[in-house]
Length: 211
Image (tube, rainbow, N blue to C red; front, side):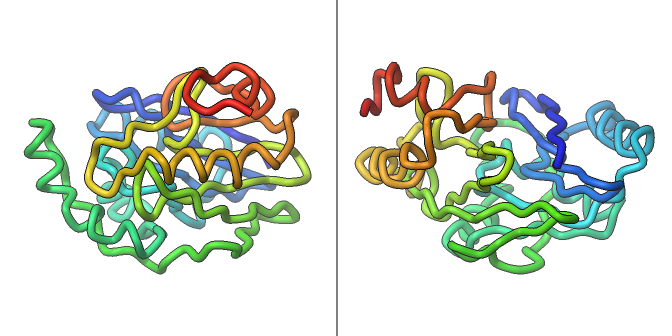
């Protein structure tokens, strides 16, 4: 399984394509205009990757801005944890709050469940339930290759904000300590914003959640 990163929209959100043997999964499609849509589409075509699924770590506006286009272009609707459905359904209201344009995302294709396994070719991802930044936030862990698609839970020397509806600082800290840190210091974390980091680096040096 390979990871391709794109940084999209005014919020500088990281969209990821996981791909293996010509098949792919897009995580948090944030492409918000024609140039960003062409960038993602062009990369998929140039690399011969056929998209199979759209997975959302959570449904905040910056992570769903490309969902309507992905459905139109590839016929795929997003998969999200049911606790984030109200946030997905409020996308237009979020857009108005931030004064950004948005094509309303489609209804989910299905709900992601904690503990399920996402497969792509011979590789798989374990679904972790990690609320706090959003009530239905999930993360995707590849135990064989030792990487984590962490969304907006843990960043390099920072954590996800908890002042949005459904956010809870204590719950977020618990998610990081109980779900992320035990995975091991060597695990590479692909975050929803900013650069990659590792569990070990954040466990030792993150000023918001230590040890």
